[in-house]
Image 1 (spheres, one colour):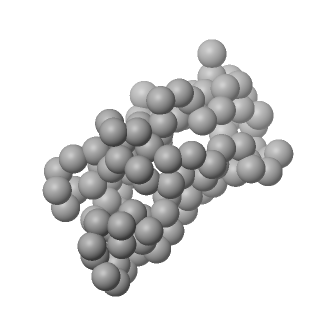
Image 2 (tube, rainbow, N blue to C red):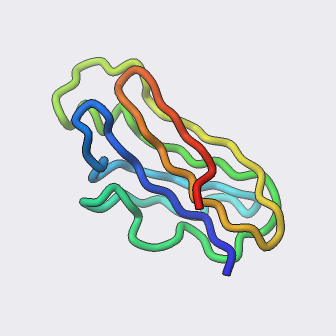
Image 3 (cartoon, rainbow, N blue to C red):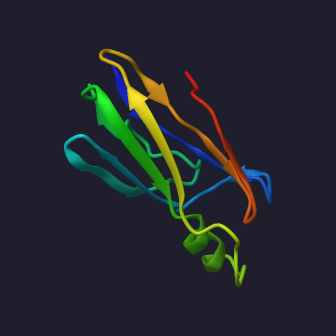
Length: 107
């Protein structure tokens, strides 16, 4: 079954980003508004059988770092915009610090 999933890693401490707010929007509007678990994952796919089209994952890294004592992180929200093809699965991990991030299409 096709799906969209994600996980997040805080590279400043080398651990999963627990409690990070994640939003997914797509052709039909808001599809998920959740927080990562202790393993930096969402526990289940954000959406199953996604419709083809343009999607945006938003990671609230500014709030995440402020909750951990970083007063003024450079990044606030990391948006990842991507296009979904029919029948395809997309795992989109985020690795980040208060100053930079990286992503890729995983499996």
